[in-house]
Amino acid sequence: MAGDHSSKRGGTSFFERLTRADDPVFEQIDRNAKSLLQSALTRLDVVSREEFDAQAAVLKRTRERLEALEAKIASLDESLSANEQRETQ
Image (cartoon, rainbow, N blue to C red; front, side, top):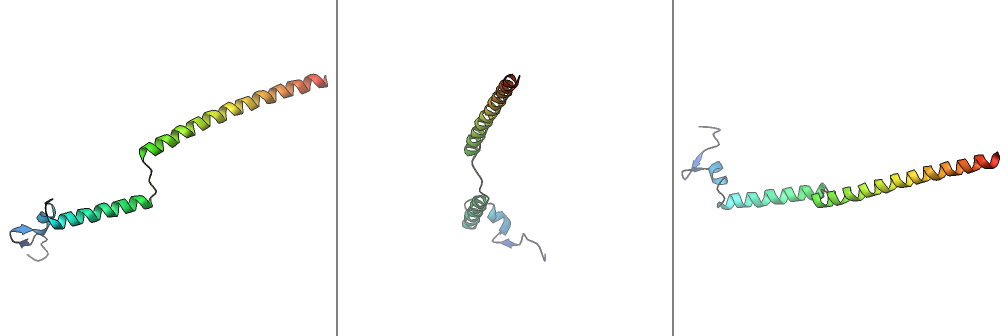
């Protein structure tokens, strides 16, 4: 049949051969696909879950420190304002 992708070669279709892991054609396609995928992921600058979690922990500690410093500055600002008010009275 024309356009039939399952044309037989030696009793096995091309697509059936590709699904056999011991077939050299399948092995070559598999290697090329893995290489292509690794190359694409490298270009995407993907990070591992460990790296992501480590950076998230650093960000959390930094945010906590920033909030503590902001609270300290607000407290010092209030103290300064109170001292200035006492001096002007």
